[in-house]
Length: 245
Image (cartoon, rainbow, N blue to C red; front, side, top):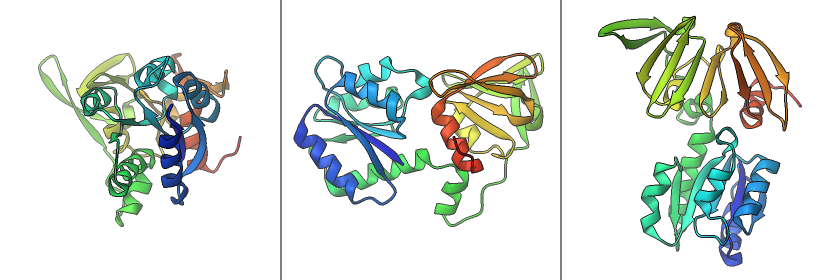
């Protein structure tokens, strides 16, 4: 897991650095002292998780998230001395928050939550010492008052839409109340691929892909729809499929 620290206080950065130094599965890729430095480092180093101070001069932690593309955003652990920021932290999708001063036990708890977000479904199952759960074969959707069982192998792509996920099947669209992450974890990873924070595609519904810009790829579906495969999710797929470059 690649981690980045962003805090305007040197002692706070040093404490996080020491805490991460003793963790075998975490690589610290950089430290930022300002919000703008954090934005630049996120784009440069593409971390999996960032320990992000909320109160920083110029650009605060929430401003950092607004300044980067949603598809490229790492998982965030907010670090703050003010507990009132906790609610807003979860509203913007933070993994967790560290309230200064924090204990070693609290840090380990937060780190474990970050690991769970970064892990693939297969890795989560292996960590739990069990076999992967049975993959979804059908999805229950409501259409004009009717309940339909939709075969997952007919779904070409799934797109997050706030508290819902929109399913695209040919020219038809369906919407179900769910999160993209919860559905991704139940879909066969050999057939479905998450290409950015909001989109999962069925692999055999993809026509081709082209290198685009800043490490992103343009994905062209068989129906002509064009999507973006962000560099962060492309890196995850490369590790899964054993690819390089």
